[in-house]
Length: 220
Ligand code: 5RP
Image 1 (cartoon, rainbow, N blue to C red):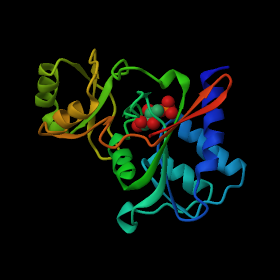
Image 2 (cartoon, protein in one colour):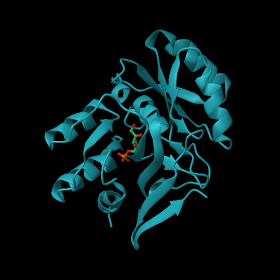
Image 3 (cartoon, helix red, strand yellow):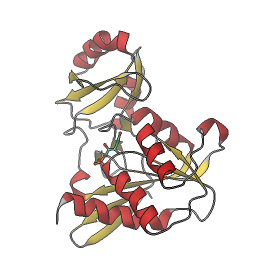
Image 4 (cartoon, protein in one colour):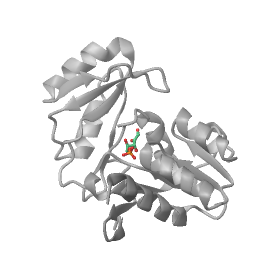
């Protein structure tokens, strides 16, 4: 099975987690694209959504789903999004699609974070995937020096401006045995908007696609 087919499979399974009514939080990335397509194909009713990127907003609106400004919403039930890596403690690296800040905001408003991935995203220790850090452009140099001092190798993501008008440093060669404290440390660097570590608010449910079907892990 290809990775694309696995993504398709987990996206279809995620339809079962859409609340009957109320707001749905929708993330970003290729797995989420398949999830939105599956909503459309299966004529699933979604009252309204909040979205983590301009691209997701456009896709949702194109299939007739009303997208709300999170400022107009109360905390809501379910946020569905992909990830770049997930460990056994439900911590994640996210931001491969440069949407990490809005993703973190929507995740913080949700009662349940349902993470949808294919099995290649499951890891023992986070960090093989370069860790995305969104930065205010004028702070890029100093943030990069600080990330280097923490042991990583930050590389500017060329040609990438986020939906918030900021830039992304991808931190290579940076294994993360203690995601919560690394998240805290990087968040504290002046000029960092968001680090793509989701440990303080990790996933509640991980749905992961394998050749034998979609498996589920639930945070104890
Ligand atoms: C975007 C994200 C995505 O969820 C993450 O990059 C996974 O993407 P994909 O589903 O394309 O593998 O965090 O910022």
